[in-house]
Length: 125
Ligand SMILES: [Zn+2]
Image (cartoon, rainbow, N blue to C red; front, side):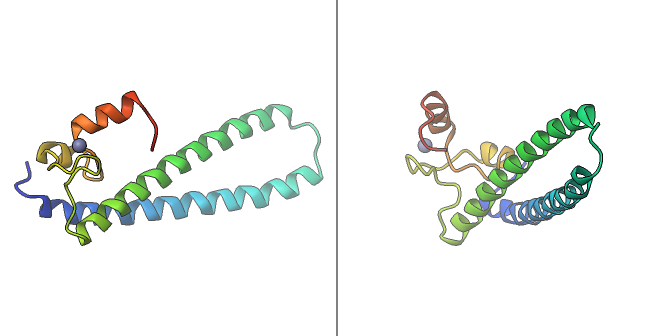
């Protein structure tokens, strides 16, 4: 249980670092795999089953990377709002976001009501 929004700054910073590390790691892996692919495709021709698995793994990695990127952006934006003194205010309607909601999702920029509206009509996200 948190008592004030300020208590969420440290965890947000930690989350930001963690996500940057994770993203760097994923990018490193992708680079290694890309480098490996080049040499592999010059030689052998009977890698059909492996290729299918590789494609699947590749897609999984891409979607994981997108998830991490999106999360990182949200966390960075939340930190930016902290700096501007706007943290915890709903981006859409300007009301204070519930502390319990912020504790559960510290990088959220919408109050619960606006989040529901946004989910019903997904225009900007
Ligand atoms: Zn709102």
